[in-house]
Image (cartoon, rainbow, N blue to C red; front, side):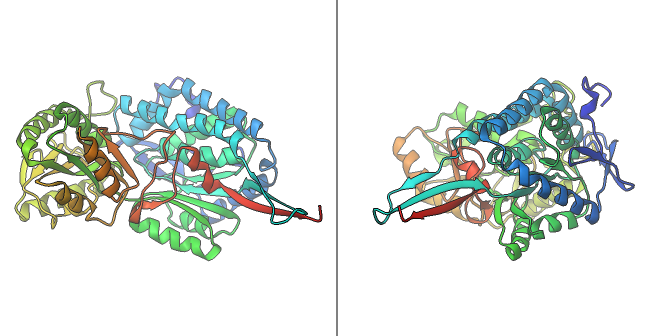
Length: 482
């Protein structure tokens, strides 16, 4: 962190009501590439987190009245400051999360685009005038801020996951409380420092840091919080959703995935290979939308496998701070154990390791990019979300067969299809039970599109003109006696 140009971005205390909140209790944040402790971050108690809610709830009374033009101005100032400090932000992210610097910068560019988008959308939160039921009545529909919002965000995208939630909330006129992952809180605190400099009023944007799960429980049960957003595992999302039920909060969930990547035999092989490397091994495979199951039609299977293995072997493990690194470490020991277990389970049931399959010679949390063949649906690598650099390649014969296999999962977040047949594009995209389908694209996330899943992969959408809907309430006003 000593190489940061803007030293004020390195913060270790919670940001509450416009101030840095110091606590007696702290927790360690480590660099997953080296195991080095890089910070001691404030560990808030329930009472201290409740104080943050009190302050934000009070600020909500005034922030909701700020006109859209002024909210947009604040967001645009935040946007500019993030871009000005992108090198430092990327460095902080790489040190605490492990991904390569270039990848960290791309994440920041992706995340900050949501601020720009929703700054513009804040001025387009339109209502309606509806023809009345009689000539002496008028029907008016308005959209108002839903109220105080809270979010719990994950460690795999410590910038973009925050901005995709905070930007629409702030644009709509809602104060925001963030509880980032305790594994990667430093990026969140750096963003808070820039939000402060952008001029957001005290209590509008707050970051509470803690290792306690009780903080999330507080955010889901306090009645003053009207919207709760969570990105993480399906199991935890279900529990948090049930806790929100007692106060009937609006809930946005982006949960687990088990994405199929379908390659038909008429696909452009080079583009398919480019796409699968991006989809599968970005962030060391630690993404909810990355490909887990790679289905390849038999006519192109062998050519694909040869090309895929050659590209996987060229991936370079290492510290994200090294310029030639393409793949960083896993986030922690639990993630490493899970990958080992999934590989062992597959091998015990007849799978074959084509490349990788073990901890790297670098040791620590580095696991070799791995490709398995001869897999089947009874293996964890097929039916679980792997969340690591582990790919299963499965041959198929017919369109109907691959659609059935692709849909055989409780998840429905992202899916990918490579084909040059327009009819197949239409049929397959319509039959796939997923919230998102990428046609001849291995990465399709952007601020103009609605990101989200179906089935047990979540509720709601982030980004696009639809992304602000969860942060406003619709009010119907009837005027009579005209």
